[in-house]
Image (tube, rainbow, N blue to C red; front, side, top):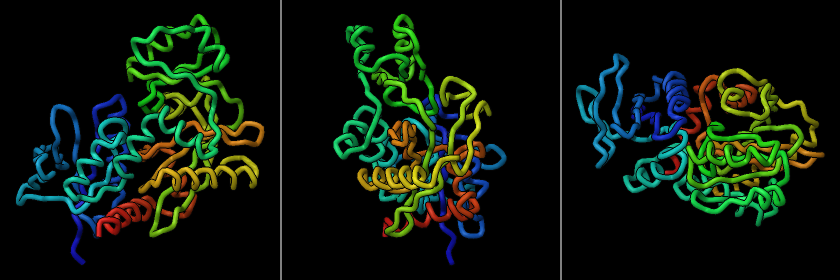
Length: 328
């Protein structure tokens, strides 16, 4: 069997680039080197480069996404996308690879762009009966009435950048006087901001992926943060418990898994997704769905894959083979 050339892209242009580098390194370590030639490719504003183990950089020709491996020019057979945030999670790279006819492991450009925009994604899914928190949207430059915001979403509430991940720029606000500062913090990440009512219940996160024509849903992970919410420190600095499988009833487990499957299907997604809910009074409310979830050792999807009895080598291999088969 001829070994396929797999470019693992990582980095990106957002605050999430360090998490992306960790995800990419885990994928490179885990992919089966007997089946694939593996190339870590760093995507940064200052340059795109294939980076060898000794740190040598080989620039990527963006005209066809080729690069030298030191001996010959490589055009990858498939791209494993671990770029969180822009341009990997918002559809830009997905559309670029589609134009080049290079398969990649994440979802298509439209689904990526839609799910990355929390406001638009929640609006679409609400139309299909998916329950979400009450929300209020603002854009930088708009006049802001904190009273109008409180009237709509109540207190406490969460102020979030509309298009960002890893909880960058997110604040929990308990008093009206703190809203403006929280909004200014969110504007550092995005000029669009979403403000949502606080849901009180059990937070869970559920992975899903496609193998063949089947959508497979993983065991939910329960998130118990030591902080006010599942913020950056809770996600990546150990200030939370992530319990897989979640300590919820079988009925609640089935319900969130079916909601995850429904969302994956409604959005016509590919690759692996992670969908977050808060179960309040037995009812799951969607927080968001992520189409390029973290794959670092601390991340939720690798834990759920292991809970399902898969090694990361097996799981990442499924994602690569699925991308290749979709392009035939």
